[in-house]
Every structure is written in C-alpha cells, then in structure tokens.
Length: 214
Ligand SMILES: Cc1cc2nc3c(=O)[nH]c(=O)nc-3n(C[C@H](O)[C@H](O)[C@H](O)COP(=O)(O)O)c2cc1C
Image (tube, rainbow, N blue to C red; front, side, top):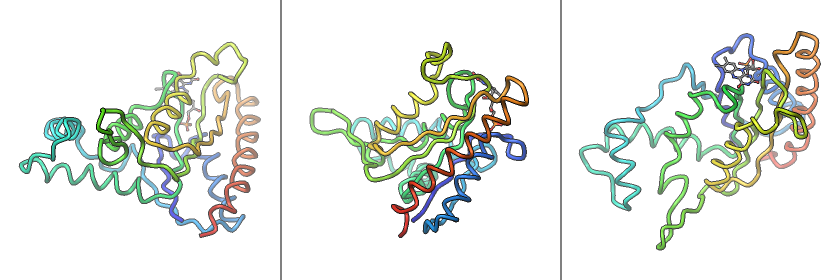
C-alpha cells in the first residue's frame, strides 16, 4: 500500500500539525500496516506551473479536446503530479488552517491535480463525476482557535468543508479528519490539544491498519 503524505505547512521543525501526523504514521507502523510512505512537501518541492500554457491546456480538456501538441511538454509535469496522487492508496494531508481555510500551497496543489479526464470526467450531458473512488483520505489539521462543532467559531471553518467538497468531487468517499485545536490560545491548551490529537491519530491508525495490510 502506498501512502502519499502531502505536507502543507512551512514550519516543519515546529509544526503542530506534523506532530500529530507523525504520530499517525508511527502508529500505522506499530499496527503493522503494510505502508510505504512517499512525502510531498508543498512548500519546498518543485511544483509545475499552473498558469500560461498549462492553463490553456486545462481549457482544451474542459472543452473535451486533446491538449494542443505544442503544449504537451509543460503538461507532463502536471501529469507527473497527478500520477503520484493517483498511485497512492491513501493520501494523508497535513495542513494548518490559514485564514479560515487551507494554505495557498495546498490550494495550488489542488488546482494542479484536479483536472478533467484525470481526477474527474464529464458525461455526455456535461455532468462531472469523480474518478478517485477507492482511495482513502486522512486530513490532519491544526488551528490557532477552536472551530469545534457547536462552538461559536464553527461557522468560520472553511477548511474541513472545502477539503471534503473538493475531494468528494473527485470521488473520494472515505475521508477522515483529525482537527487539532486550539493551538494559539496559551501553551497549556496547546499541549493538551496536541496530546488529544496524538491520541485521536493513533486510534485512527489502529482503525485503518487492518485495511492496509497489503
Ligand atoms: C498565514 C496564517 C494564517 C492563519 N490563519 C488562521 C485562522 O484563520 N484561524 C486560526 O484559528 N488560526 C490561524 N492561523 C494559526 C495556525 O492555524 C496555527 O498556528 C496552526 O497550528 C499552525 O500549524 P503548524 O504549526 O502545523 O504550521 C494562521 C497562521 C498563519 C501563519
């Protein structure tokens, strides 16, 4: 089983999100899940262009046409990123909340890989459907504030609903969230929330492991 870990925080050494994601990965190992982990760091790895010729190519695809031969070469870097995502049985996204939503680097990644004919397809009447059924998605998020269900900030959470919507759109129905919060309301609350997040991540890993035995 291949697990693609998509890192969407630039704070690798001190990241709260990654503390919890790493606990999840460690527990998957302890629970004997047969997973090979590939890491994509959206803030340090090279990303393909999502402008110019590659945007023209996207419009070819949206019109149901093949990509113009003159633009195939730059499109290959988009295809490489897409293949990496499609190859993975499980995708783990580690993302802090930024301005109530996702960091721009994760939005950029989504804009690069969510392409017609690759992650979703239109039927004859133009209705799209997802092509990524069968893949599991785990999102570990951390937030400065607390956006828990029933709390006063819950309506501001555009992060979990957006990620559920876009990855649901491409056909992923098996989506799990570990939201770690509040991170920036004092060190005691931060540490307690991280410990809760680590426990939740370990429980989730134990639940996922049997399905990842190869
Ligand atoms: C650019 C930026 C925007 C942020 N926006 C929010 C926000 O809208 N709501 C919130 O609760 N925290 C916000 N935060 C705080 C982070 O979500 C929080 O510190 C998180 O735990 C950071 O995760 P990390 O340590 O893995 O990078 C923001 C932080 C940054 C750097």
